[in-house]
Every structure is written in C-alpha cells, then in structure tokens.
Image (cartoon, rainbow over all chains, first blue to last red; front, top):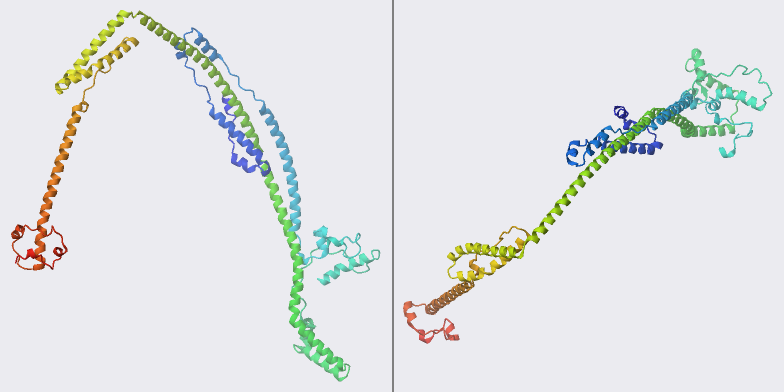
Length: 161
Length: 380
C-alpha cells in the first residue's frame, strides 16, 4: 500500500501549461482532463472497504458454520495488486525524449549562433550615407550587379528595376 | 565624396574597360580597407560664390584684408585700359545673363537643394529601414529559439503526469477489486438472512390463517345465537344508561326519544355481531347521540310564532308613528298661512286651531296665494 501511494507526484499544472507550445495545446488539454477524471475516480473510492460485522451475522444466520467459513475465507483472501506494465514504457519514452530534446537544443543553439553573427554584422555596419556601392555590396551581397551576365546598363533584367 | 569616388572608381572603371591593360604607376598600392573618415558637413568656403576663401587667407599676411580686392580691381582696370578685354555687345548680354542667373540661383537655390537632398534621404531611409527590419527579425528569432529551449525543459512534467495516471489507474483498480470482494460476500450473507426471514414470515402467516379457519369452523350455530343475544342485551343496557340523563332534561319528548332510540340498538347489534364474527373481541362503538334542541319539530313552530309576533309589533308601531306624525304636521301649516299676509296681531294659536275649517283641504288657486285672504279667514 505504501509503495503504491507514494507514486503520485504533485504536478504544477500552471507551470506545465506555460511550457506547452500552442500547437500542442489540444493534447495537453486531453491529458489534463484524463488526469482529472482519474483522480476524481480515485478519490470517490474508499481506500479500504468497510468491515463486515461478523458477530451480527453469526447470530442472524441460522446455518451453522457458514458464517465462520465465510469469515475464514474472507480474511485469508488476498486481492492481487494489478501489474504495472506501462511505467517501463513511460521511462523508455522519457529517455528518448531526453535525447531528442538534447538534439533539438543543440540545433537551436547553433541556429542562435548564426543569427547572432548576422546581428553583429548589421550592428557594426557603417552608416549608409558614408557607404559607397562597393561597401554596400559587401554588406548586402545581393545588391552586387552582375556585369558578366548583363554587360549593358542597368546590369539586371528590366523587370527587377 | 566625389574625390573618394574618383579614387575608387578610376581603377575599377579602368579594370572593367580594359581588363588586360596594366593600371600604370597610379594606385599600385593595396586598396585602403580601413573605414574612411566621414564626409565633411559643409563644402569649401567661397567668397562671392566664386573665389575660395583660401585665396584670401593666402594673401592676408602680406596685404591684409583689402589685398585681394585691390588686386582684383587693379587687374580689371589693367584689362580694360589696355583693351585686352574689349567692351562690346556681348559684354552687356553677358552681364544681363549673369545678373539673371544670380537672381535665379539666389531665389530658388535653396528649394532645389532641399528637393535633391530629400531624394537622397529617401533612398537612404529605405536602406535603413531594411537594415532595421533585419535586425529586429533576427532578434525575435533568437528570442523564440531561447523560448523553445525553455519549453523543452518542461518535458519532465509530461512524464510525471503520465506516471501519475498509470499509478492512479492501478490504485483504482485495486480498490475496485477489494470493493467487489466485500460486496459479494455481503450479498451472500444478506441473502441467507433474507431467506430465513421470508421463511419465518411465511410460516407465521400460514399458522395464523390455519388457526383462524379452525376457530371459525368451531363456532357452532348455538354459540353464535347465544353470543348475539348477549350482545343485544349488553347494548340495551348501555343505551339505557345513556338515555336516562337525557330524559331528565327533556320532559315531554322522552317518549319520542325512546321511539327514536329503538332502531339504533338494532343497528348497533348488527355491528356487534359482525364484529364478533370477524374477531373474538366485541366493542360497542356507538349507541345514541344526545338529541339537541334543534331536532324537535315544535321548536320550528315556536320560532315562527316569535318572528311573526315581532313583525306584528313592528308594523303596529310604525303605523302609530306615522299617524301621529301626520297629525302633528297638519297644525303648523295653518298658523303660517294666517301670519304672512295679514302681518297683524294674530289671535292665539289655540283660537286658530279651534277653527274647524280646513281651507288647505280644498286646494284652490285662490287659497294658495298669500295676497288674497279667504273670506272665512278674516278673524281680525
């Protein structure tokens, strides 16, 4: 009994809800409703069934020995605890999730580094009114006019003007 | 900027026009990659729009402030006097054109400059906007990435919740099992008890029915008659005991009461016999009830008599009253008739009352008017 009961951990649903991205909100809601339903069902059931009043039954029932037999068997009966099959799977899922999360974090960090580099470039740029066209082509390579492909002015297709 | 552009563009232009040619002795060094100093805010100073300030500064140490002006004037006079510059038509035309040009530049120069500057500003502003947008976008993207990383940290919650769910399911299942065991055992025990009770009740009912049937069978006809007679006599005694106090109160009606009370015992006797047959206990439920004053028919006659007497007296009184009122009404009418027209010391009212004539009975027009005195009325 004690082993079973200690398994329930207190979950901070508000913090959990904050961390859910918007595209997974429906799944989160489903999980929460399921959890609530289960906990409600759990609290509705009593922890132990009420005790049977054997003395009363001994006096009331006329058949001899029946009540005693029942009592003996009832007390001897051991209700088996349900076997836990899912926790192992959940732990495995957790490991996988940890791995994929680490990967994602790694990729995210590298992306952030890239963005930071670009940001630095923009921040350290010389102001436009001190630039020449060559400076502009350095900072924004897409502005460079391709003089080989289009040798005649304006050096780019007319549609792009 | 133009100078800088010249520095830059010349080698590039040369290179593009004749890529194979060598550039020559110019610009052989490496291109200066350091950021160049910013452009000067103002252009070179000029005096009178033509002559740069440096010339005046150059001559200032030797000739002071007036030096260049004196030089200019001397030069001009030398040209004119020696006829190196000849004044002819073009001079005047040129002077007019120059005058007009100066006027135009002075008037519209600022506006044109502002317009050109604005064009340039727009281009620069567009580029600046692009740059700022890129910066903001990058920053927001970085922010989002960081946020996603923070979100990922919350995955533990999910697994905790899942484990909790599983644990709750197991617990509920176990409790349900315990509960079912308890319920089943209890149901069986209760069933046993219920069966016992039912059996007992059935036995009791059967026994009662059997006993009753036998008792009823055992009541012979003789016993029945005897019991009925006894019940009747009991009832008579009981009815008599209730009737005696009533006879003392109602004197003349006792015989009637006795008549009335006879049918009652027979009915109650019937009740008692039926009671005896159904069960062995007999109780006389009711015998007679007390006769009240309202049951007597004589009461009705007396009531009618009283009411009629009252009505008669009322009638008599009202007639008397009206008769008397009428009599009283007649006498005041005569006295008023005599006083008004005559306005004389009238006789005593007693005298008038003695007059038997009642001219008011004969209502004629003459008698009604006050002016005319009826001839029999002159008592004066």
